[in-house]
Length: 457
Image 1 (cartoon, rainbow, N blue to C red):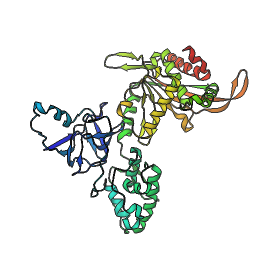
Image 2: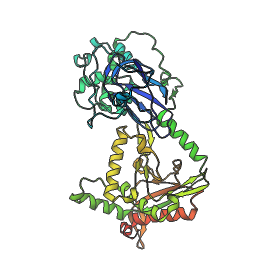
Image 3: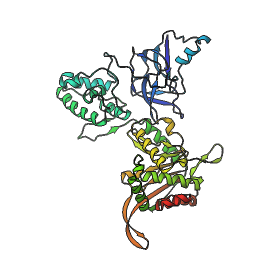
Image 4: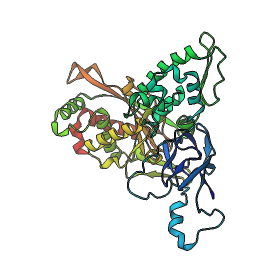
């Protein structure tokens, strides 16, 4: 019988998702919980497991297409599956095994291990129209033998950002995998392949007018003209734009600045890095700032609060879910360190390392982006000293951390070269008075100037 799987509710009120790539094709046999596709929501890339065991009958969306939650995504030919009538009581176990969970991520796994991906069949069609165009533009006889005949097997190993980059360039990762072997494909591998095969394709392709690019891809005019590039607003960029507009026109923003002498903090970091017992922890300035923020929020609860408009209440949170703004290839995301006030300095450093690696790999889940009571954005990594950050919706404060610079500064009655940092605090003036914002910023600054003060908080 034919059974349809509709796009499930991926959580956090998300109403749609874009199909990044299909990992199965019509005619493929799939096992329960086998990964069917990768879809990109406004917050994260999510793998969709199969809620059925059977054969893929048809795909209802192409790669790059946006699908609404609840819309048909894929159809299966399931042996013995009755779609018109409920299963008999005696088959309750089978029903639990085969029925999809539309509010989660698929059926419950049959075992603790992750199911292995099934090898693609040799006769499968190219993953996308862009891949087909590359194969036409660069025929196999124009490529090295290792590229012309890629081995048929498991899906090429790469991260979602790399796959997205390959998709933009029109590169088939299966062909790149023939060059790199079993290791994970990197962005550099994709660029090197695109540069090499682009030259070969140009030499062998007929001199005809290029086909128009799909509307979903950036389209640029030839160089030498008044060129423009149009990029569809979707995914993380669309979500960020909506959230920032909502925040800017809902919460009255105020930003205040404070330049801090962080020489003592930088000396402390150098000492901790030299301690062999702490070598497995990456303790840097951001970790110290995050710890200082968590301590200061305990003394200034208005900066850790939420404005509840329907209830007409200010909600003070007695926990710190600390958001850390991260710039990724997919755009700006703000993953959360839960209960940051309970973590030691090394605990926060470890959380930051894991958070950063997960974000760069494009594996941050929607649950890891949900909520947050206060946020930090590290603009210092770009060499910027100060800014006026916009509040994430629902939060009353965000701190921008500037670059650390050696500058002449008054120290103990004399001018000396000191390590200086500028802190920029934006807050919601409905919840936070100017004096409260100033006290919070001063508390953070005091810890950074004299880290020993943390013992008093």
